[in-house]
Length: 305
Image (tube, rainbow, N blue to C red; front, side, top):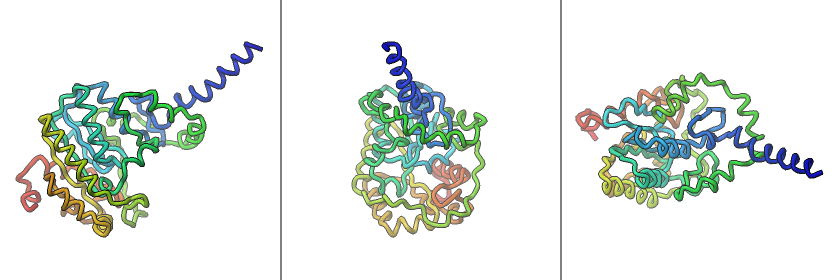
């Protein structure tokens, strides 16, 4: 009976602990061997841990929402950049990222920060409950961080998605570790069905908080000799109009009082639908143009700004 009980305990542990760790839908247990399995990986955790484990590989970072994921940082000449983008990347989390990197002795030369309506309409508290966005623990306590992911029920519910996912050829994973971009080798086709502004139900103004967070990033960079460039992401015209209706212009006006930034909200290159994959994300060609503008102060568009 003792052996039977022991065997039962082992089987229970295999199912309730080993299985969710092995399946790892959000890839938090496989930060150095990411698998794009159909479930959105927790990129902010994976990237933070990856950088901490490879502190000398990069000296510059691009922060922002998934929109800056359309900027190929391998084309930036000012430093060895890594793209820290992830779904709904927020200034408060970008600030915490910088604090973690600096506290762990990373030598950082450049920071580019892309902001948009997500930056000032999304509450960071929401992300604490999201398994795809839970932030790397500030105190480094990984045990506490991992606990919600050791969930057999959630692992089983993700099985259909994982089993139905298209098999990767390995290029996307290679891009992820080389640049932080996970779409460089993917064909980005225009979503003809997306004909409404990109706007989420949970959006609510938090302009003052967002301005303070971005100002804190600027102050931290200045204190540590880091060259900072802040810019707004180009927005699809209908999305931009919706943002203005909700007060986005007020946020940009307040930000300009404390932090200088480049405003690409409606640059000439992004006034048509052909410059966007859908009403939220611009194309890589637009990202290339942003790099050109940010690196060349004589670029005609910047001179007009």
